[in-house]
Length: 463
Image (cartoon, rainbow, N blue to C red; front, side, top):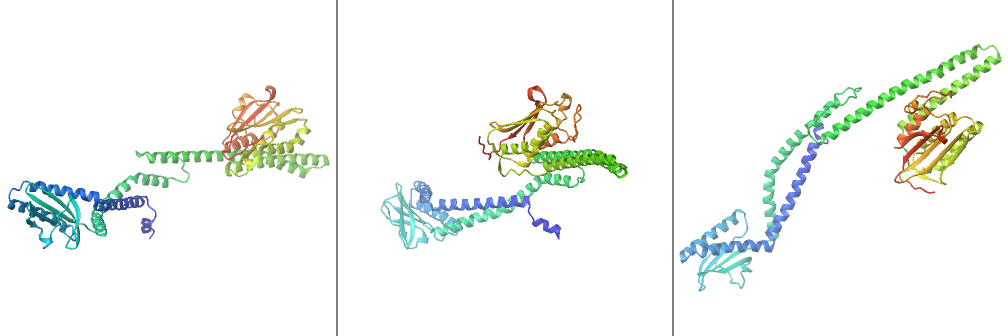
């Protein structure tokens, strides 16, 4: 049953054919209106009548005898009226031939005993047997000729045009539908091949499709699919590496917790118990901090940006500096902020907060006692620029290329850490479509991290 139902579902081929049928119907309507206008337009009608009249006059000018004239006028009458009968026109044309003295030589048999009235102009309207006609009147050197065509009502003309065009369209319709159906079906064959190629791939196979097509419309599609597969492959590889690194980093604090718990259980003196408790708390704290940072990285990587509200970036910085002030004062570190009074922007506050917290935590953690940490916030024409600089020991040149990698910690310092802080910053900056740059810090010492975040079009700023 499903095999038959699929033919009644959405189909590109059916949609193209229906579109062509609609186009044909519109063309039919337009041509019908045009045909009706052409048949009923007085100017166009008179032009045709004059052309027929001149043809008749030209033929009569060659008739020198009455018998020749009778042959010409009767022949034209038969030709005209035969065509009228073929098109099932309800009335026929009337032709009348007089000599120059006014004697009637010929009158169409269909007219009976009627008489076409003479007119002052070449074309005029007249009633014959109670019906309205358009009469053409002209004279040659020997003959006086009148040619009368019936003036038909508009509904009849409209129906005649509709019927004539409908027959032509019905003849052309099956040919056009069949041709278009075959051509579109053949044109979509590469798309079906591509679909089957994707369906046949293993669920773990993220290799490129390597599908080439001569059709320009399919090239962007195949290129986009290969690019998507490459991105998925890279993301999965990063996730595998992340899980392995996280497991490796968690192994150390877990081992320490296990060992200190064993020592605590076997401690025989209060001093041993106290030392084991302190070491156990340090190990638990390190594990908790590592887990919190892993969760933070996961949220930044997977959550959608929620830049729906306008926030004051200066207020956010002031709150973060106030939160870290006790830790800085304990180590006699001077914190300073250079920023306008207000700087409003539509931005994801959680992502920006991750950037600020990790940069400030790193700076306070690595700067020597009595050092300085300066935070600067400003706005350029196209970006918001955040800078965190210190006069600490800095980062060696050999480590700068890898400093934003996960779990990488440079050499030359003894500060405990997880190696995730700057990786979180880099990831958060990327989520905001920004850039981060590392340069020399205060007075050429330490580090300066400069973050540039593009201004949102909906943002409003003030100073």
